Amino acid sequence: MIYLQIFWAFFISGILGYGGGPASIPLIEKEVVDRYEWLSLHEFSEVLALGNALPGPIATKMAGYIGFEQAGILGAVVGVFAAVAPSLLLMIGLLSLLTKHKGSPKVKRLTVVVRPVIAVLLGVMAYDFFFSSYESIGILQMLVIGIISYLLMNRWKVHPAYVIAAALLYGGLFLS
Image (cartoon, rainbow, N blue to C red; front, side, top):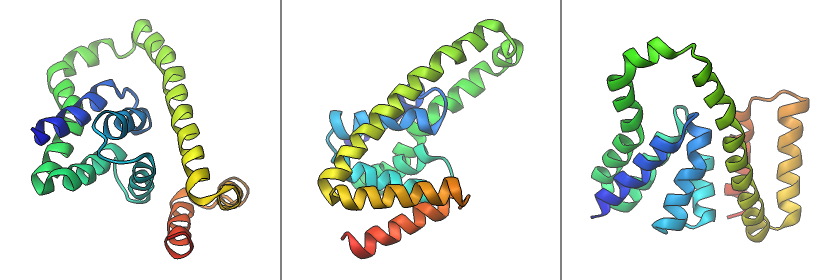
């Protein structure tokens, strides 16, 4: 039963996560934290941070990790397959249709309508992470990490991967 739950959690997120990883992260959070309660919001944010620090698509990394945590190696395989299956099936089944209609005004309007929805989902997730961070490490630590990260990325143009790695190192050394 757990394999079916892992499959559906990541398959549904893959189908509805139009726009890639950023769009599917709130959907994965809803399934993993709220529906199945495999992780707390704090644990989910740590998995997300770890996934962002590694190269490759975020949804597949999260699916592999969470699947492994819940059901071992087979759970990881099921999770990764479920995360990529919607795209795989659509690309195989609809490749000619996509090629034919890629410049259609209707498809372009769909993209314009979906973008604000993705922005709202990301905003809600950021709001949840803000309060989770506030509760777990306090306002001072949260503000210091946030301000330093902002300055590093926007003022001094440090690559986000280095900022994420530094925040992980800081958290591992001083917040554990």
